[in-house]
Image 1 (tube, rainbow, N blue to C red):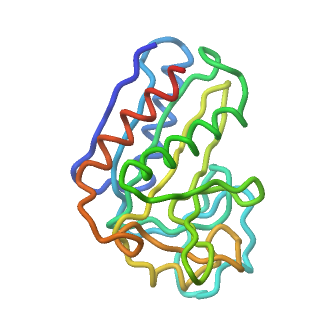
Image 2 (image 1 turned 90 degrees about the vertical axis):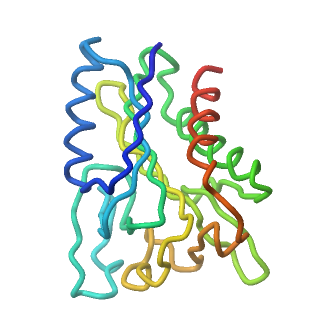
Image 3 (image 1 turned 135 degrees about the vertical axis):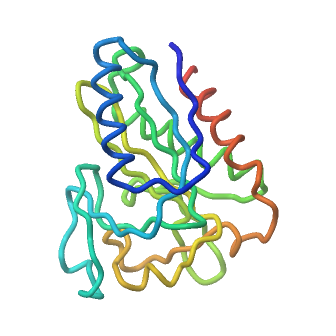
Amino acid sequence: MSIEIKKSEKPIIYEDAKKMMEERLLKVDLNKSDELIWTLEHPDIYTAGTSYNEKDILDKSIKILETNRGGKITYHGPGQLICYFVIDLKKRKKDIRNFISIIEKTIIDTLKFFNIKTFSDTENIGIWYKDKEQTKKVAAIGVRISKWIAYHGFSINISNDLDKYKAIVPCGIKDKGITNLKQIKDQDYKELEKKLVEIFISNLNK
């Protein structure tokens, strides 16, 4: 199973990324294209998944883009690593929960490499970090399945502006916070992207 690894240096507009993933999905389904793992950043944007609630928009002046991924409202922007994918579950396990577990393990294992201990939560999707004050989300996951092909992806907060989250109830969760890696541990994360892709491929091939 061949997976193309794509890295975009310049920020990619959300709608353009979504269109490209949908086109790739159709080709993968017809065995006309390799699967894809794609790392990038988005310019500032708030997106709403299929289960969002309008009550989660606290600042009514912001623009929200409704999308077909799973999940609720989140923010994307500079300083946040996005990892999109188009992965054919027909060639692996037709098990959505198992695939989500692979994503969770990939993020947790990657952050462990940087000496940051994080965990998943069966009730609140995403990857979490517990500091002295509260439990805070450091990575968000939003996946859609079509024709047993998984696409969309996940994001890891590295050095993004956390004030942007004040306009929304991130992922509809009110009693937990949001953080980024620079707040948790101020160190060099240049190798994070490369390590993440390595671990993701390894976990997919197990």
